[in-house]
Image 1 (cartoon, rainbow, N blue to C red):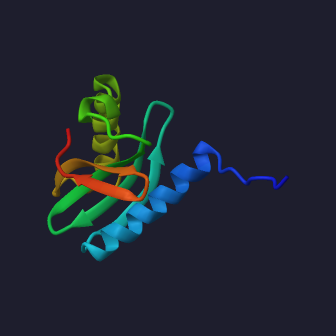
Image 2: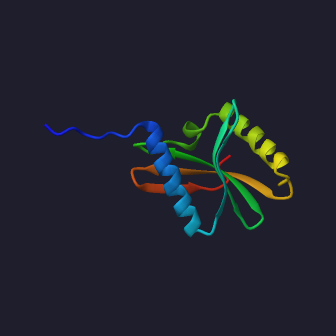
Length: 116
């Protein structure tokens, strides 16, 4: 019997974050920061395009979910707070900001702009 190599959820998450970076690069986005976090929240990717600073959450599910099932209200609030803190810390308050979600179902992806 052959042993199967299974990736952990963490490893899959890292893989899809790197895949997202590659997809965003080809769409003209520039990576600013990856996995920015503190004890209360984490932002998977922070990218820049034009005058926008974009905070991206990468999600992977086997089946498609509704947007409101992906990120709960409290998590959205924590991510907004962390984004504001990031902008203040690195003096990036002059940029317009938005929050996007990149959703993977298998290897199909959807980039939801201005998700919350």
